[in-house]
Image (tube, rainbow, N blue to C red; front, side, top):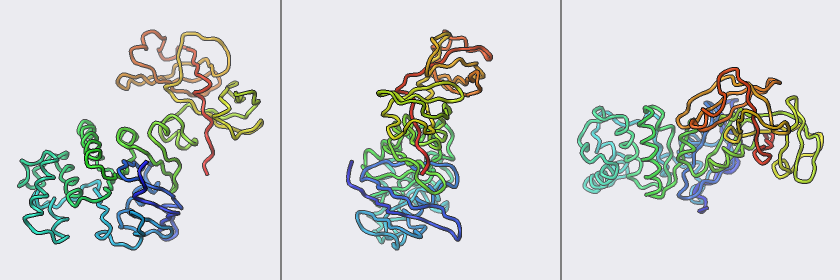
Length: 363
């Protein structure tokens, strides 16, 4: 990984008696695409605003390129922010909007016109340079906002849910524009979103926040396949969660007894647990196999089909065991016809020992 561009050490932000961000520690590398996710009120936008200089930390230190920036004004720290509502000036033309930051820096008119033109051409907007902002589509306005932020060639770009107002098709197209642009120019992007699909599709690393604290940091693959605790598992849509107690540890296998039967996981997945400890198990929906019949045993359940959802090439099958445990399985749509998937039908489910993860507690 490249050297840290941004370092946040024990950073907190309070508003009166309310703590919006609590003692977070986070390094953001040069050239990284980092996404910060969480539900409304989790502290992700406040974190972004502290990076932008719009809010000052109550405690802790933020460093950019090794220099403390806590007290630096917004215009002095070179951390432009693309807002959710874009904040373009309706009384200025496309070119004048892009030139604005350069004009505030005292760049001569000829140079700022040239640089604005280069960025508009790069964004595929050369034919709209003299248009009013109100004459552009949502996607075109989005690209103008990006050009306005990048024309000053900052080391980092902050983005606050910039695609939330776009329709589904345009949102996917703009995801492609953003990822290609970030790789091409090589600057750091910090992207706040509540959308799993956006974060997992674009980011190199994802930060999951809740109640002002960081719950997990990792690649999209790490967070999806091995969530660190129950909150993260449920936040990313994981529903296959089983509570139990460690019954036995033998060789490389941990046996867990629950109200729904006996389950097993690998010793590596729960290396810190001992016999008698309460544990929470998690199984990814894509790891659950469905068959018309299978042998009885651990990590095997008889389930009733209670619903299904079509999600493109995949189907999500909603299941309930005889003891009331609800599970979800994801299977290829093409494989649905081979299984009795009608509501109310009984099927067998199973999963591998290595697919059973032990979730940690929230710290």
